[in-house]
Length: 164
Image (cartoon, rainbow, N blue to C red; front, top):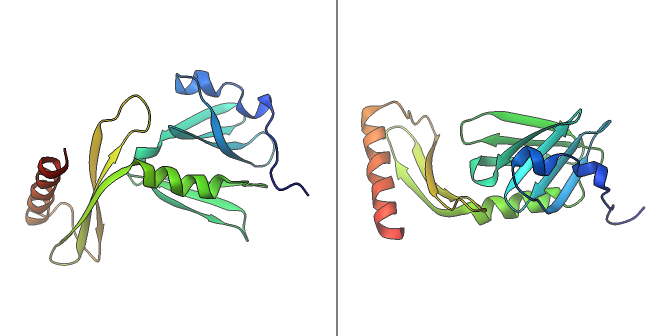
């Protein structure tokens, strides 16, 4: 069994048109039929039945590869969850982590009552390098609570002033 499987042009047919720019696939995984999950410099893209959907790296909050079930999962900063079964993940799990880290420019944790909120600044890895901030609650933190919202805004303003 080869260590790395080579791609064919069929794996990425229509990807450049779907994302609107030339792409250079960095890693990919294949699933049943023609399912392909590919990581490029700028985005993660999924092709199912010839239709591409893509997510810029800065919009992906996290994910995981489960080798025993061959399942790749990811969630967006808007909390949309996605899952695909891959027969072969190749280097995609490593690339996924690297691209998430590459798009993260600043992180900070603030205490709330209850819990904590992580404020994260992420930058696009393509032509649009705008830094966008989002908040990740944990431990029962409520993003709709007025005091929590005020703390998030204050921390985001501080991070913008300090880093940008």
